[in-house]
Length: 158
Image 1: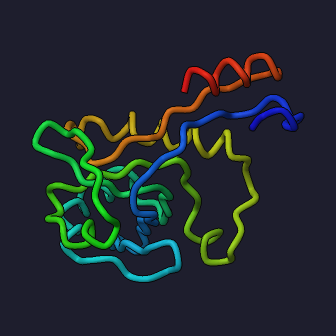
Image 2 (image 1 turned 90 degrees about the vertical axis):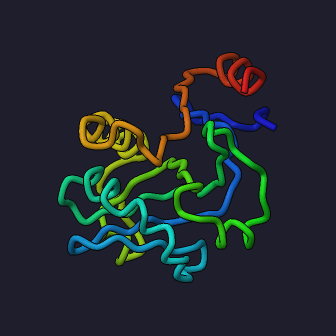
């Protein structure tokens, strides 16, 4: 329900589904952790090179969901526990945020607002396209709204 929302401008995104994951790139290594900090399976390391290309040498944490896909990259709805057993080649990542590693370790990264981080995520993806022509990741779409009317229309469309 959007009736009580009064803080504009705002960023509107569809609800993402999948297994919550933080892709942590630090000291040239990639690790996958779940919502509660639990290490996730090593078979996703198929995508390490793509994530290293994406973050361009920066210590970075990508926040989003992991999903299983078929051979045509269509999302297959699976239980989160089953997703942990899926071969890495069948996993894709949908991100909505990116933060610096040092902020992640501190538990807060308030140096820049969400809009800047989201735009930075998309910019990173654009810069990595040459090295990652078939990326295992995408950014969840977002739309900026400036009024209640725009918010209601956008939510209806999503």
